[in-house]
Amino acid sequence: MADYYGQPQHTQHQFLHGAGQQPRSHQMVKAATAVTAGGSLLLLSGLTLAATVIALTIATPVLVIFSPVIIPAVITLFLLFSGFLASGGFGVAAISVLSWIYRYVTGKRPPGADQLEQARHKLATKAGEMKDKAQEFGQQHITGTHQT
Image (cartoon, rainbow, N blue to C red; front, side, top):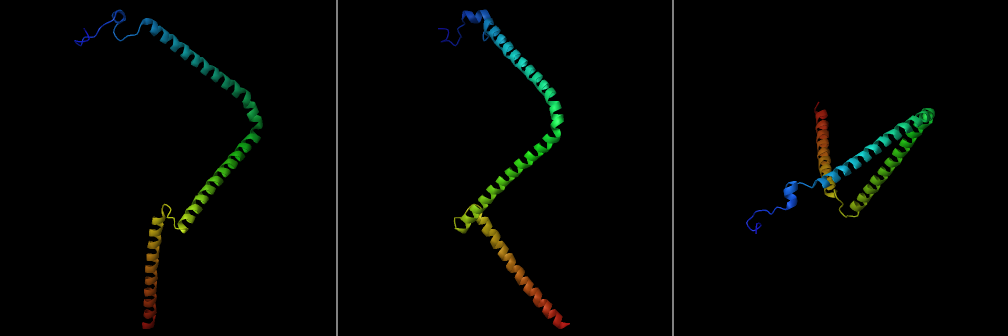
């Protein structure tokens, strides 16, 4: 009947431990789990750091001895990898351009064909204007030399 009037019902657990709080045993289990997980991760990071320092200490003399061989080998491998990557990229670009040209020539209207047509029309118009100006200039130059 207390719910009917909007008053919450309190259990004995809520009176003992406070409303909205977890029992002390749950808090202790959470704390123990957090300490265990945190400690394990801290130990693991310390072991990783120690292993890295030991590996670097062992590998440094080897790297110093073989550095005249390792550095040119790394540079060569980098250039080789870069060359293959660039070659593949240029190949893909060439294939896509040839595919676009094929679709354009066969009349399939690939993306950008309208822009190409507009640019071609503008160039043709300007070329015609330049031809007319050149003829006009030539006519003026010929008539100008006959008058002097």
